[in-house]
Image (tube, rainbow, N blue to C red; front, side, top):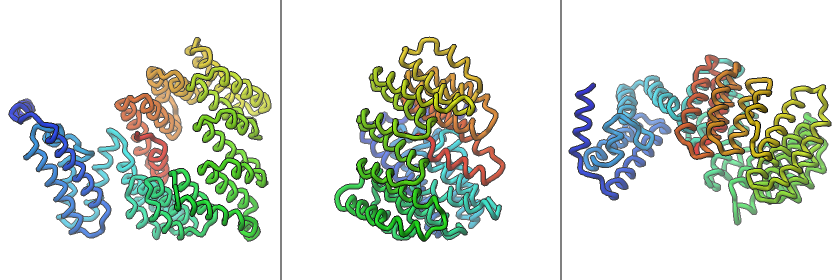
Length: 481
């Protein structure tokens, strides 16, 4: 080991210093290698797969040979990842491909992904491992759900072709539409609107079609593409009653209207979105549109409109929580007066819950206490949190306080308490939220370390159906930027 270290140090010492051009060229080759690897993992033809892997390996070898002084060369020689790739991993996968062993090839791919996710979860490694869980799920009832999770996570990670190949294996037509809708949303998110529109035609379920249209709106569709979305939504609204009358589900009409209203909110058409809510015969669907509209308005700085909408939410606990979340946003914006007013509104809503429903009541009260701490410059924080009755809520309290105060030590406190949470899924979810908190403060190291804790919980799940669900949650619940 010592001789290896000396040899490595000598190699670095003898390498000429890297110029800016060297670093740029080395980075370009590393990115090309990653793109070649990603393509290799999507193609079905074994020969093409091997050619792509050989080209990726050749790129990494060229970096070491032609740009030995670059940071990428140091990473490759040291067995570290360059642009997310380890040369040894590629060689392992290529060996399996050359041996003509597809199962070994898949196992090698899964092993590479697991090694990456254990250190620092990414959308790509989580997608590959969700696919592994789905492929190994032999439960006749739950396998179709695992495949849906895999299709959604793969498309979110950019593996569009592979996600579409899963669709025929989902032996449920409604779930197929749900999966296609998710893939359409992934395409819209990266502005591949033409391809997304083409696949939108496959979705004849009105609810999922409306949901997909909302994804276009959220992606900031413009010009003629925006006009298509507006026209599609208008057509859905015109046909809504006929669609509902032909449905055996009495909640169907409200569900479709909710999807259409949410899409309207995404387009910034708040007036028509709120007009739709007034025609709904479901308070819960109506309230969730109001929740979303209030959040979007607050993000756009329209505080008075957001507050007015939140105050019109019917369900007391939901109104209380949204009022405190708006208060949190006001505190971060430095508007303590508005935050205080919102906390008072939350207290009025909480009084309507009543202590009979103790868990919901205590949850609302805890959010109010945290808001009051922030308003009072976090005096007596430790004493307040110490009084929180459960470890789940104490961890959540520290996490929310950390986000409001910008104090990373509070995220550390939240993580320490989260280790004590007994339920695996709850503990995993809390670690994911804490990771996002660290990332919001720019602490990438702690964010990755905490995300890895969440991943290990998901990956240890013995039931592959539950593992697919947990990995799906992390793929969409973790922040990667």
